[in-house]
Length: 117
Image (cartoon, rainbow, N blue to C red; front, side, top):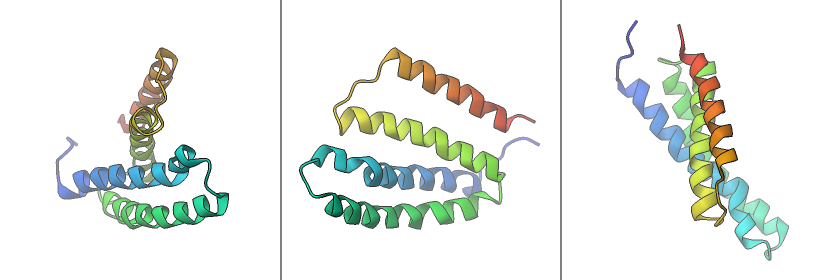
């Protein structure tokens, strides 16, 4: 069956992308502010994660009309790598190396098998 572009196919990807931005900041954003108390980082992260869940839960519910749960999880993981790569460079000021690129590419190749026949 050929893949059809529908709102149930596209919206979950966009929502997972947005939710992953929130989650990446919740998990790693505090690393730029290591001088703040850990309890502040925890509470702030919980607050940010709330918005991640507000996007991820409906994204998976809507996406389950088109994708299997394995496909939804794979989409989320690939998005995680893309968002995290940008985040680590632009927010944390870290460099990505060829080793990172090769490792991420191998993960993407593995993920592609989830979408085969």
